[in-house]
Figure (tube, rainbow, N blue to C red):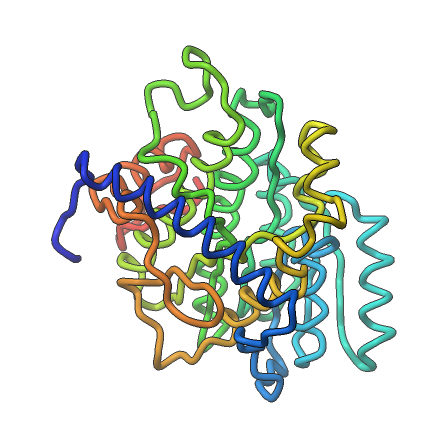
Amino acid sequence: MPEVRDSSIFDELETRFYSLKDFIQEFILNVLAWMGFAFRAKPDPSVRLDGQTVIVTGGNKGIGREVSTDMARRGARVIIACRDVKEAEKVAQEIKDKNSNSVVKVKSLDLSSIDSVKKFSEEVIREESRIDVLVNNAGLMIHDKRRNEKGWEMMFAINYLGHVYLTMALRNKMKQSSPDPRVIFVSSMAHAMVFNIDWNDLHWERKRWWWNEAYGASKYAEILFARELAQRDRGLRVYSVDPGTSQTNLFDGMHPFVRMITTNKLVSPFFRTVQSAANNVIHTVIYPRDKYNPSNNFHQDGKEKTPSPCALNQREQRLLWTMTREILGMKVPEDGIMVPA
């Protein structure tokens, strides 16, 4: 394991600067791209995934839909996992119509419910001969405080806890069935909006609710978990990726005024296209195995990107690991890596 690093007041100050710099840089580059400057490399179209099985959570909309389409184009067997099965079936058919001989399945998955995640995992393990890639893409961003059936804050439950349970439930199957298993957590630049997770008030029962901090905490947790899992399990390639800012359905849960601004055509130049955001994920899926660096597995635009200084806090990583295991009621087998009880 790397040398332990703790956050300091200087890391918090640097993280504030990191967040501001990242935000400004992303918007400037998006405007330049809108003006026609092609400085972002597209994923290599020649890389094939024939015979591989790829699961994409939230693969029926936005970034997930583009990723699912690309995976099918590369010859992969695609499983779209989402709540709206009826809509996803239409998307799956459209993908198959565009890619002859492609195999695209749809399965029900509600990440806010651990029972649903467990059922999905058991079905996939039973029905699929192999699982090569898990793209933890589905996400929720809402302006009002909500809780799931267990009382967990909803964004943390869906964006983080549900995906962690899914990952750990499928991990052994992936390692046993694939020569190169990969897990990708779709995070966000919003991870730099927080400095740590308040484990004493995880569900915002005492402190004042701020949607941006709650959302940022879920994305911060994804990066910390991906870093910790990458260190603990060297037989699994684990990544987190910043897709950049794009006008996707992620804003559907926001206040009408915010939706009006973020979906307005006048602000489009400041956002990536959905395809550009999806390319970040696709780059990571097909990233060369020999270039994988478990010590820095955060990516953007097809290359490594250093997360915020506070996201490099290894003590926070380990605390997150322990607390996550306890919250999800995981057990610890001989290899020391949590699995569903």
